[in-house]
Image (cartoon, rainbow, N blue to C red):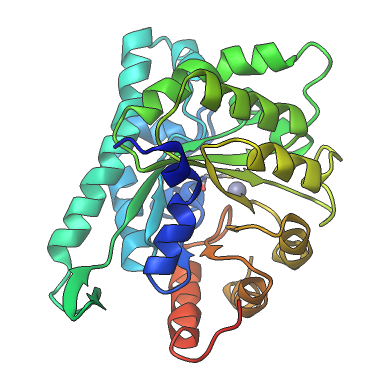
Length: 318
Ligand SMILES: [Zn+2]
């Protein structure tokens, strides 16, 4: 898929507008892999399953689709060429695993579509029934995720990590994932301004022709984890023509409302009840993409999907 630049920045808003004013994103991928018995105690974390158990990756995508997600994120969050090479894989093998992460998500989507009993997920559009669409977002985790030292939650990479170093680190993976057949790129758990800038510059330099979303994480509800201003981070995203949405992930639900108000753009987002009790407020604050992250499960997503579909039948402020 390739889009004109104006189509890219409106891609998410057009999508949510067309399908009821919101979209449901999946929840914790690694969390659900572990629930199925995967041992992710490894520098590759969830991406380890791309090597050892691709069937489980497909299973987890299907769990989230069955739970009502209509945007699923690939298992590539912690999949990096450098990380695979550190395991002894050749560069070509590493690159093909990245492509595989997108293919597996697309396969799960096909299986899901095939299994949908007619009527259950159909939307009526201009009098015709259409299939409820599912988007595949290629996940890109931050440099800190590759380091596997928790620095995606501090945003502190040290002075040696420059803008150029981050761009060099991310460039090839971004190129591969953008050409692998995903509908969009999901940059997740962005902990600082520097990395947001690196992504924005790479999207431009590489002329990436699918849209992207930027998702930051926060531990105080005010700034991103590094202490950089969420507003400054969001404006880096805003000024990039390929960025179609800005949001928050892997952040305690109690912080999300304030952050949405700060960002004033689109947002994605731990007991299930807790999580779900916030959804209406987040929607009213202007968010339109709702999902989970670590420690959320298909049950969380089912509950979110339920709340939103009930709400959309009543007048909804946005
Ligand atoms: Zn997370």
